[in-house]
Image (tube, rainbow, N blue to C red; front, side, top):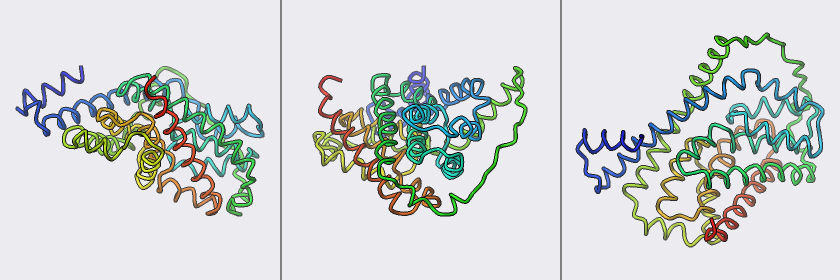
Length: 320
């Protein structure tokens, strides 16, 4: 359906040739923008009905006083179903610390929340297929879960800003939620307006970059840059993602274009994860609650994990 719509707009109405770079790029852009925005709206609306009661305050209350493997599993699971952006990192971080949640569990949540959520999963599957999506989700959740143990073992609490430990947020006021059909519709539609309103710019930028790669960048050039899936090429992909900023949805069309040009799946996964969870803007936001040593160790763990993910799946690409 989206392919036919793009063909109608680009080839029939605009008169661009399918074999031309501009025609290929424009077709990619129209098709992916339409597909992603429709999927975004539908999934966010549907999940809004189910998540009407799941606010940051309720997430904090659910996690209060928990520790151990069960807490990490809950943190990773909640991170996967809560589409909180980096702007929510600071209040969530403070809220988790104030609630007595171990720092390792808190960091597991902060890794999982931006990197994996149900909206990104559906959009990713709709654009690049369920197989690659399953790989991305499984590795993202594993990185978040294992990260809780690794970072907790390093006893990083001494590098949390002192003022964080002194904050007493108190209990959030218990507001009565309207669970009627009209109330759930209002909540779900508000979710659509807020989330789509926040990320549509990243969708257009991401699709624009992907369209340019698809239409104008030769496959052999991409192959030379990406290499043969070696450790060095994966490291370069991770480093290239650090200065960028996007959420999981915005980077999907770029990943689609890279996969279409023959870039190994492990390299693409590593790049996606770096853009979403290891971006410089994300680190600068977290700097307000964490001292530089904690941020350095946190970023180093993520970077090493993403490189290992990329190298592993590049080695297995012949069976994927």
